[in-house]
Length: 64
Image 1 (cartoon, rainbow, N blue to C red):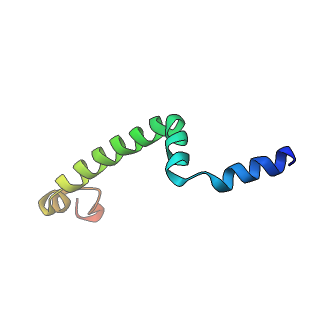
Image 2: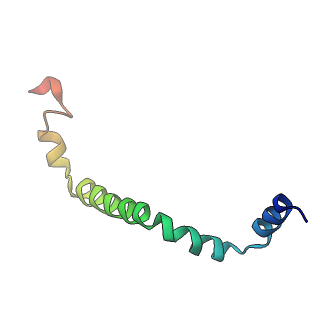
């Protein structure tokens, strides 16, 4: 078997869990950052009330 065929065979026989485990070693900073930013974004976004939107000069630029 040539090295190209051996590499292709290796990729097709590897389980999904093995691939995820291997790649997570390199991607964990991205996953952690995405989780942290998502948490902050949702926390801030869900804390805005209708009263805040009504009083905002950004959502009602012509009323101020």
